Amino acid sequence: MVSIIETVIFGLVQGLTEWLPVSSSGHLAFLQSFFDWEPPTIFYVLLHLGTLSVIVMYFRKDIWRVFGALTRRDFNSEEGKLGFFVVFGNIPTAAIGYIFQDLFESFFSNLFVVSIAFFVTGFLLFITKRRVGDNRALNYLDSLLLGVAQGIAIIPGVSRSGATISTGLLRGINRKVTVKFSFLLSIPAILGALIATSNELNLLVSGEDVLAMLVGVVVSMIVGYLSLKALMRAVMNQKFHWFAFYCWIMGTLIIFSQTL
Image (cartoon, rainbow, N blue to C red):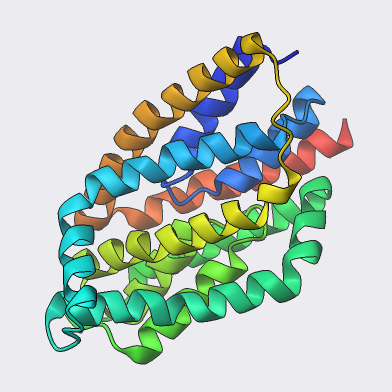
């Protein structure tokens, strides 16, 4: 039996942390341990589809322009280049996920590793404060490095948005382009991960469980949209590195919880 209270809690956490640079997977791993409850795989899939829909809605105009350029094979336009870089950047993400998936997934039950990952994420966020320049255009090497960062972020506690945006900022890429590319890059990666887990789905759930899970998904979508807007403001106002302190606090909290 799935509780509405539990799905709302997980939906709140997913919505707040999926797009903010504080690692949704790290938070969910901690929640699973804290509540001693592991939601059914279908709930995780629905949560990710919900927060993914937020990205599609927020960047719908950019997605449409990129899709149009790719279908026309117009790789010389800004949208065409961006679309090509999204495809190119997801190659290392897919390779890392394929090779290290089992290892990275095993970290969900190792909260010490999760806490260390939070500290690493915090460090990465903090050093963006000392980046040099932010007006360079995106190139092949940038898309490759951001794709690698996205692949490493499969580790719970390493934030996907934190790793990719930090990499872009440290490379000196225009901050608006960095954020847009980071989230466009996430769409194929998230869809690919969901397809990879489709064989694990158990669709035999009760009507009450479905209702409870849908409530959690709606909560995650609403909160996810608000958190995405907050992230955009933080990056554009040069306050992205502030999230480092939260990651360090979270890492410390997890370590402390293991000593009790």
